[in-house]
Length: 445
Image 1 (cartoon, rainbow, N blue to C red):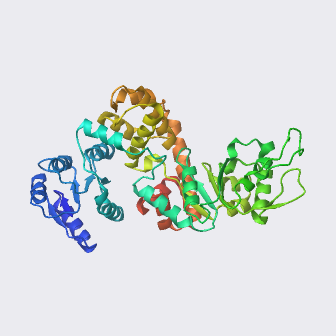
Image 2 (cartoon, rainbow, N blue to C red):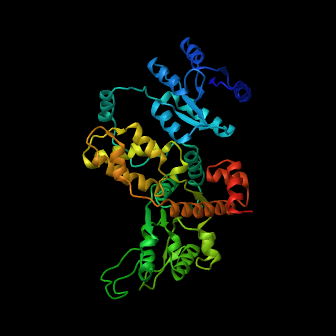
Image 3 (cartoon, rainbow, N blue to C red):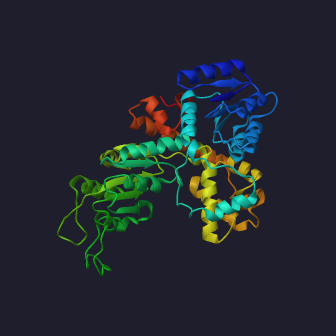
């Protein structure tokens, strides 16, 4: 590893720490010295550079490396206006960035990921023609990507951990964070992967037909029942049943659901026969189920039945540079859907993306990108197209809602880990210091 850092005390401390972790480490204090070491081919696997240096900034070194054909992974360290610098770093070809003061465990993970992925990095090019040719030759856009941020890594680590088990899973997260995708990934990595996956939106089911949606009915069971209908439990039999917005279920339907889960048998409306069912249950909500239990609006026994394992969905604003990965994916998807040929975002538009808080998360980003792609006449989405695609946001209500949601996420995470602060921080995708600060802010003891 080559460290380029002009704070000699800090650089020496980092060099010592990385050597203890098994790395060979050299350090320089200027861009010129760093370029000299790289140019003589000393075989570095990674460059860890400060942004502000005496002779140039770290991005100057990164651009020099690209011009020289040196594709060594590059991580930028910065404590100056992280959002704008993250945009510039990622746009210039950095594989990652980290804010100062550096959290050692997070830095170590970023270093290991960058070195492990180095063999998969494709050479950068500055020519529009080459970019367009690459775009034409690329495969059809995937429906979803998982991201490379620390929050994303921890999220899918939990998915891989719980998927092979028979445990019921409760997915908590704000609207638009991708809860159904995570439910599908759990199903796909489970022993039930070759069986049905059936999703039911509990928030869209009228109270008087909820039972028939879950358990089905026979012909003549009620007025209008002209033929037999198969309910969700039978449709998902052998596989996975995903109940979205489970907190919206009425109390009487909760009773019927609990009975079905306990006895593994259901009876369609109008039938005298019970049917054996075998399903793996995954539920999701953007509300605070624990509070609903305390208020008597959600059965505690059902809560524990569906909550054998909890997964928290990180919000888009907490997923770092994943924002740009998702934005580029949505551009590609919009190109295919709308018959456009937009390549991506210009630098000013990228900065605007990074400054926005994205209260609607991935769903909001997807909608904004699709509209901007439609409005764009050139190859790159600019500030004008992006501005016209964004809905006005009232900052104060959003802030209050975000704080209430964040407090609920922290309290639920603490409950699910039995109060273990280290595990809670890991579950939320933050470090212990940040967790303690937030607990103090919200008065959580």
